[in-house]
Image 1 (spheres, rainbow over the protein chains, first blue to last red):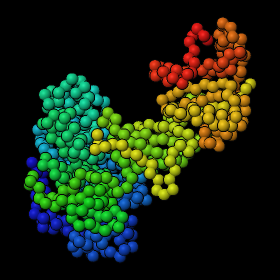
Image 2 (image 1 turned 90 degrees about the vertical axis):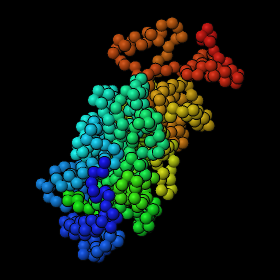
Image 3 (image 1 turned 30 degrees about the vertical axis):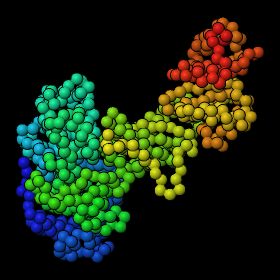
Image 4 (image 1 turned 120 degrees about the vertical axis):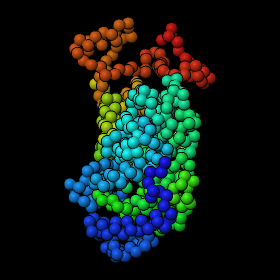
Length: 436
Length: 139
């Protein structure tokens, strides 16, 4: 099923909608968002200068740093009383990135999520278990609302507690699972460890995955674990743009369809910031159309991909983005949570007993991400007892948990054990191969 | 009171040897040693003939090292003497955090006792190196 007719319009009609909405979005943001007006004035572009879609490239970029500089709501275009929902995601430092929605924004958002649920094969007959963590993360409530829109029965399970997850999957006859792909693999193996065969003992037939990329190797593994009947697609979004709902894979599995009537994608060279021709790989830049609370123009997502404009066999005419092939920056995705090394650094710098050097190791153990942070011990007073050393470890872990919302492992080493860098430090080692 | 040095070491092959080789180079004599392990790191505690020089040498080479005081009690090598000392401390409600013994024994070569998960291989490599392994009856 295709949820909205806008997904199947001829190219010229999609572009006509984009141009109309782009003009009004630029006028709106110029009139209402002071930091963005400042950027436009600085390059001498006025709203009336936007006459064609090609004029988009004259507009300044918006960066994640703009959220930090205007924390918490300096980029908002409406008064607080118009906001009906806030969400938040990781910031590059201690403060989160806060986003807001008016009632119209929520409606637009959840309709876009409904589209990608349909792309993945969901219908009103499905029983959907949401195994994303709830809270300020947009993933859980986004899929929750979008699936309710199409009439599916939603179980807001949240993450963790494997026994309960499996009990609900079985007892409620769950047909659709929403999770990060790595958690879905972990859950599937736990199901098999209990002597169950998902293909025979469960009704699960659809997986809608997000929060982290799913490689083709992970998709193959998903079929091995859950059975060949399992149709698994992934979708793309980020809280700044609205959350999930920006793009999703259809069951033809040839890239993620971008909801182009609401989002204009561009691909740029992250170094030169030049727009690249269609089909080339670079950093995805997204302009949100028609958003009321938090309009964003030319937002630098940091995700590397390429765009494909050929129509898809599924009937949709919207362009597709390829599976992400990395990041233009040093952001890590750990268990579906975005982590910036700068966030970790900020925590470590406040702890006196350790030195300023650190290393981050990311591995996938038993399908789940494990992040180990190695720090150098410098304070000899801690050698009086093991208790003092383990208290320090515990204190670092707790501070990181509070900052990142993630459990980490801490490894203490002696001074000068870690590599020193003269140029740009390479502190992160990611051993996850093909996501497995 | 006597002074001990405590050195932070990682739990990996060769890390203790790095400490003892520094002390050897610096002509520091080790009188007593003890370590306890956690999965990732250990604290090596030593009594040496020149703790200040030992700390300086180790710190200069990047080891986190601390000098602190411990109590040394002389015990005759007779049955029940350790028990007697611990009883005195226990009766006095004094908690002993850790205890270890000197490696130098009158008239006899010191004996190191160590634990490993791979006894067979450890014995094999030590025998191959002509290290004399001491049985219980010889202690």
